[in-house]
Image (cartoon, rainbow, N blue to C red; front, top):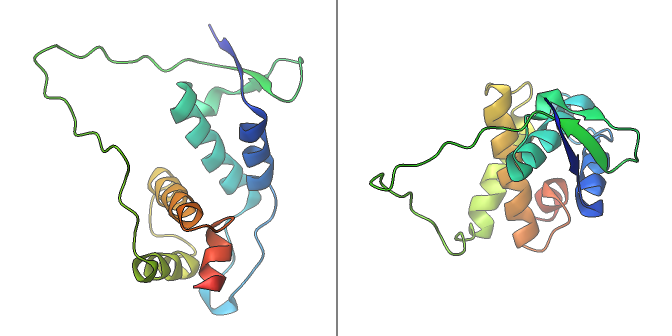
Length: 144
């Protein structure tokens, strides 16, 4: 049975932003990712954050922030299991490293990665760009 969820206004804004067309910036790099692919990646990130399967989302009729989806079962960990390393605050990439990553992303179209890996690297680029004070990775690409 699907569980009902409510996303924050900030989460909704990110989904809407991701659903908008990406401007074509450099013709030699190919066409940008589609709005659908960007929206799917945004839903995947939200699903990972909130614990639902992003491919099972459907509206509830209560408003834009409300939806239903199948909950992802959380695996119970054995007390003797090795705990993963947890970073208190991830290290920031240098500006040069970020510029190199963003240049690769701009020219990786069509991508050679599978959809899930591509969504992960795009999300990483977005987070790193924001940690450097940019609105998104495209703005960071142009500024760096």
